[in-house]
Length: 114
Image (cartoon, rainbow, N blue to C red; front, side, top):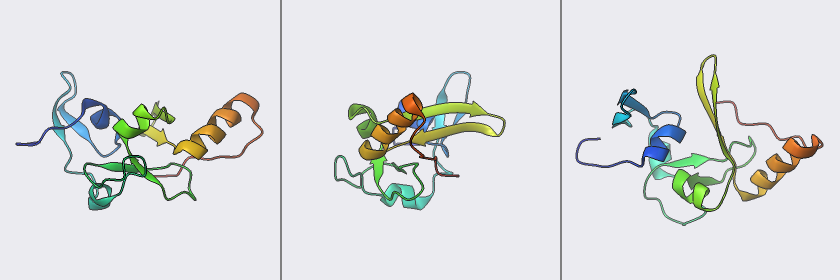
């Protein structure tokens, strides 16, 4: 926004970011992103640059950048719901549990309620 630039994938997968022009996917607006996201430390790259999302498993405190998560093949799911888009992203250990749960149904992992 302004003189800054944003990753398009972050605009799609960070729930508080939206487009001023959704049809053209232009004018990314980050004004609703909480300050704590800008101060979060990515456990993958170990930096505080950019916006970090929290692992969606409710008892996990790990944070990561969307781009770092995608590079590490972490589970980041986007679902359209009745109340708008829902994004769930999991750190490496919880990505593995999420995948096993989806395959077997034996594990109990629930996405954080935002």
